[in-house]
Image 1 (cartoon, rainbow, N blue to C red):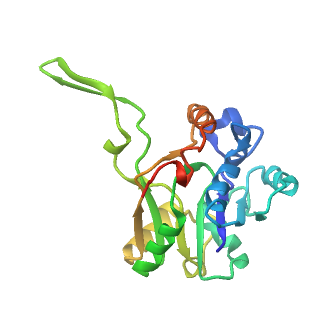
Image 2: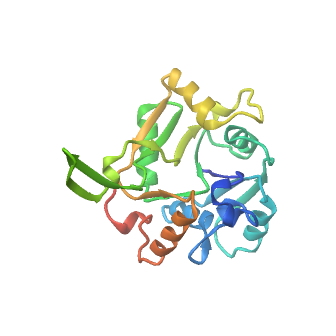
Length: 238
């Protein structure tokens, strides 16, 4: 089954790194984050990748041209200004099966891919999104009459559910007329909701994006663990 990696955005919120490279090529420890994302899939038997590149995509092409691995990687230049829906549309000609996997090039999670696929097939809808809880960013403070009664770290489980990527899609979603300006998140997915075709796979384990330099640094520290927290064997997650 093909795995599409969305790797074309500008990464403006981590411009300290992305002035010279595309966001998926930002290093987490010794390897770019896109390598870590692909390893999540490859460790579970999914090694056939399509990278939908855009901003500084030639750097991604050069990296995979020189990478010594058993993975099958095709890098497709989908345009600097293309939105996420258009990027997926641009690579569908390389996808022969009716079902394929997709995710963003900037988020890591201990997702059980086989369970995700099984869930997708069980509901028979057109799309599945992995729902995750965002990392806790701020401490919790509770008070009564001005007196602090609780002060501590906010738990990730206290937050709501958000789009964590790690999608399963039916190819037919992208066979219609999709312009370069069509985003996945604010056009295609809401349309699927209206048609009762989008289902959520709830992931309770590790997930973290790399939107800021601080998050990059946090992930680099976690990457030194054996196994890494985004490895399925780190603990029983789902």
